[in-house]
Image 1 (cartoon, rainbow, N blue to C red):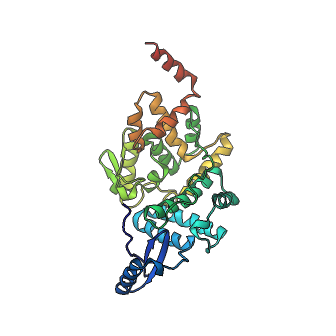
Image 2: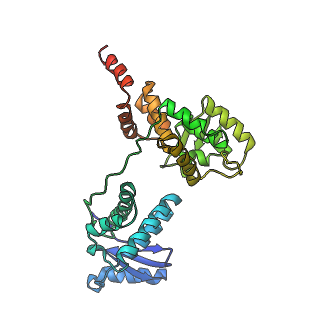
Image 3: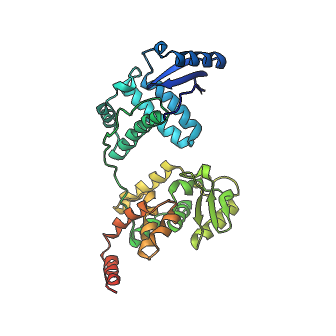
Length: 327
């Protein structure tokens, strides 16, 4: 049985609304008056206006929900793409008027690669799926829309390449790179690591600071422990990885430094490849995929299975595996 629609309050407009039959209705700002109108409308379905609501109005309710129930970074991503989307399709379109081709054309109109186009389309799809879940819509008008194939980050460093990269950095940036290399952490985790996250030989990011909905744990062994012990003493408050100006590393500053080295060395250097290299090295050293997934902060081994494809470029490793298969 479908749930009975109920009025809900939207902070942005300071008004009460309710949705039924795929339409949303403004009940006004006063709670008592809003519920009175709600009961009148539900008692006499013929009084319901036929106009309904626009897709833009729906997006504002959705963004309110995302802001209240998801992390700030997620909200900013959704706000960015939806703002762009409505600049393209306008604010008067009704949900039932939306066509899959309009979404595809919007995503392709900007200077976005296939991965970013797929992310943009996902945001619109998620908004519409949410509206169906909350019974604001009967169905998603773009169900089945195909997204561009996302580019995979296939860069994995050989031991020789890693030595060349590290030789280029003799300042504080080297500590940041080494920490990522020895822990397999995400670049964002390294950038935001503070002394308060460190508990002896482990790092714990609480759920509200981690990707996903669970605490993120990093294990400090070897050089990673040495680096953290040294830097937490120097920087007991705030991020511990700082540049020569005493400022935390940013996503752009890391990218900029690695881009310069890429041109010099003749191969692509990206921060996320360090994480992939950690996973690949672990698998080559016979660490089981489930353990690797946990070390990387994944709930399952799907991503790790994808990393296995990198090993197909290592014939020496595959020869050893072939010999093991015959034992």
